[in-house]
Length: 248
Picture 1: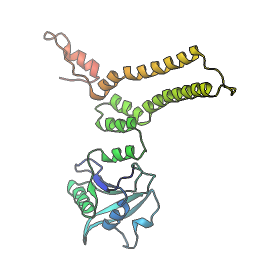
Picture 2: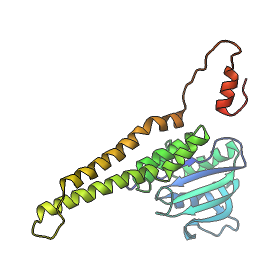
Picture 3: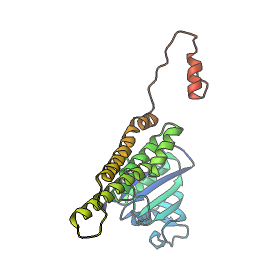
Picture 4: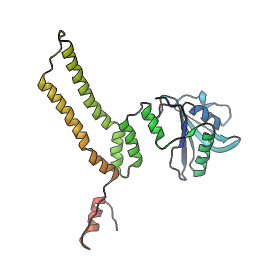
């Protein structure tokens, strides 16, 4: 799905840090990046660089130098969104990254909505819905197990499981259709017991996935738990044992 607008956003946490990144994605990403970027010797154009290269220079707002930067160029379709993408790596001060984003927007980009880069990756076919949701789970993970579970989803664990069921059902449907439509061909007869076994296997696989939903939700979001009891019966000791750390 082709997106017509070029979007931009701060891709790192908005807090004082060593590095900040402003990401630009869309048809005009390289052109807009070129309008704010100036190489050290002032001669190079981002359009002339190959994909997945990084370049030293300055970000300009008109004649004003905003920061000394490294600019990464990633050309479609080999980027996270499958669109032309430019990432400006600057110093991570809040004021600096905001000024750079402002300069990029003034040159024609639109502020990205929350999650819009991942949305474009999904709409452009780079990731499926399960992976898109896993990316958001990784961002919001509150613990090690939640992050591990989200990473498994990002690597396609759910996608692979669903694909396995889909492939089995498509193969079964194709075999059944061919056997019924072309009796004169030497096609192996579909036995009722075999057909039933395949369908039950697919049903069981989907039920296993559904049964894991509540456990996955608990890992992602945590559980509200109350430990109640009389004074000095070991409530704090119990919670320390469960959490693996010393508490109040």
